[in-house]
Length: 125
Length: 184
Image (cartoon, rainbow over all chains, first blue to last red; front, side, top):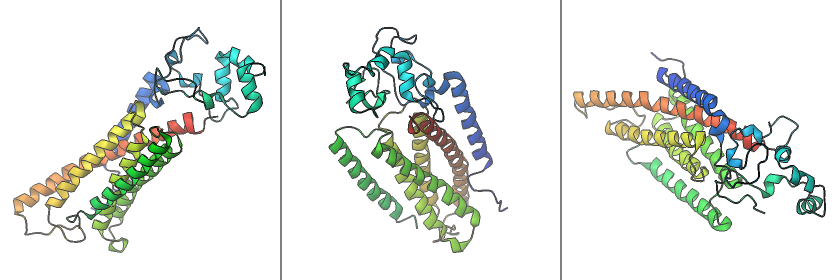
């Protein structure tokens, strides 16, 4: 009568674990990694860059999120679309160049937070 | 004994202290603590550790069935205390956004807490000794049988909710680690 199993591993408990695992896998198959999103992306429309006119149109996390174990950083992902800003960062006469000269350790996201809603400001210094 | 509700008072006081700290952080920073910043993240991590203790320690104690590990009712009190305080901290970690997997995990957390409150209510309807054993003869035979059946039914529901919650929580933690915490 005294089973040696941990109290939480009942039949129903194990089934619930499996159902949840399959549900998460299902959502991952249908919606990609969007279920991990911390909030809506900014929807302000600008000129077309990287095939979109706003961050809100981006649906794939890896567009901006570099893999944690790769050599690429998030700033490299930003620069792959925002090439004008990437160029500015090397010109001390321009704002981004001046900032980089003063504090080269700053990453884009230190001043430009995202996932704060469609209308949230993208510059927070 | 659960009758005195001591664990509920402890949880209530812990809740007041946590709320005061949360309020203090809010007043100093003038914004709702974000889930990924120092305070919001810490409260989520500590809350989750408490929730993990709620589940694992009680499950382990139930398996040992040895009196030398302490009274079952004390462990149940601890289970109820951490099972209320942990989820409350996790709720404050949400920064009041409930989208995606994190939102689903919060929903499961709320459900398991309500399930636990119902379970505590059923449990305390049956007269028990200090060690949580039922005292026979105080309830009528049929009332006792009914209460036992209800307790068993509740048990078969409470455990799977908890297991679903932990799968969902671990997926959330994995996603947060991958996309945010290890962010470069």
